[in-house]
Image 1 (cartoon, rainbow, N blue to C red):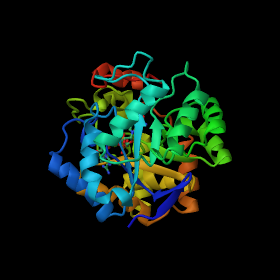
Image 2 (tube, rainbow, N blue to C red; image 1 turned 90 degrees about the vertical axis):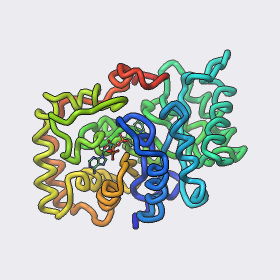
Image 3 (cartoon, protein in one colour; image 1 turned 60 degrees about the vertical axis):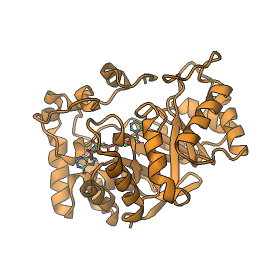
Image 4 (cartoon, helix red, strand yellow; image 1 turned 60 degrees about the horizontal axis):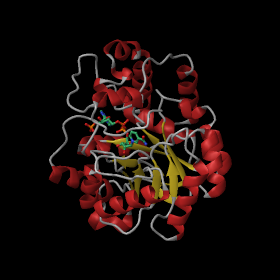
Length: 335
Ligand SMILES: NC(=O)c1ccc[n+]([C@@H]2O[C@H](COP(=O)([O-])OP(=O)(O)OC[C@H]3O[C@@H](n4cnc5c(N)ncnc54)[C@H](OP(=O)(O)O)[C@@H]3O)[C@@H](O)[C@H]2O)c1
């Protein structure tokens, strides 16, 4: 069973379940009954108590699916969903989506689809540079006071936006991309979270699966799979990033683990308030990824990894602007 961690004021399992892939972003999805079975299994078999979705995933479909799956375990888990600050299909707000009314109306839609009367942690999915973080923090504060959300968070804010917002309504968690392949969070964001007592959910902790070492230059990605367009999975970059996979493989052998488990243990070792959320759609992947928490990385292995990583150049990235080229996300703020 997974251990627990503090994520701001919330207590959650040390690794969360990113539910996006059950509807969106990683190609063909399992049958609905299988997706529901797997989501329930994450709680029942592995003790996962953090489930992440968003209104934009599958344009509302993922929330509907997650709502069905978590119904019997709703009061046992921490449910996070996200508000996209741009209108999605069917959302028509003359005053703009990023408005008090737009936020409330989007939340009502999420509550209905998720079959619940409150969201445990409600994220602003992107923080447009022209927006006023203090204003949205005020609106989120009202929703907390009304009990419609228990806590709020920001996904991919700047440090400055986070500070402004936090001063109005304390932010419980930041949800940013963070992994061995994408370490932007180390440029001030983690430091700020630590200073302000804010938790941190790392999304794409396995860099879209790359860090498992199971994808090669000949792997074919289809449909809405973002790996068709993100440069991290460009054939030449898969090859160029081999030194990172070699390092993971080597450490995994020494620690009797898998490369994916080492990549997750490295994140867990970074700070006790970092919670990786993995996307996984099979029992075997759940066993592998949740199994990462059954042991800690030793100080010695961690230091050795840090030293080696500082000498490895990373090729390619995961950018919203590249994902937008697929045309499968109907509304997106490019960061
Ligand atoms: N806030 C944001 O802007 C944002 C952005 C992206 C994602 N998210 C959230 O974060 C969650 C996680 O992100 P992510 O899905 O990109 O994370 P990820 O775990 O880094 O990548 C998921 C991909 O890796 C594969 N994978 C996972 N474990 C594996 C293993 N042990 N071996 C081989 N392949 C493995 C999965 O395969 P299968 O699915 O086929 O099993 C899936 O294709 C999402 O589900 C979503 O809830 C948030």
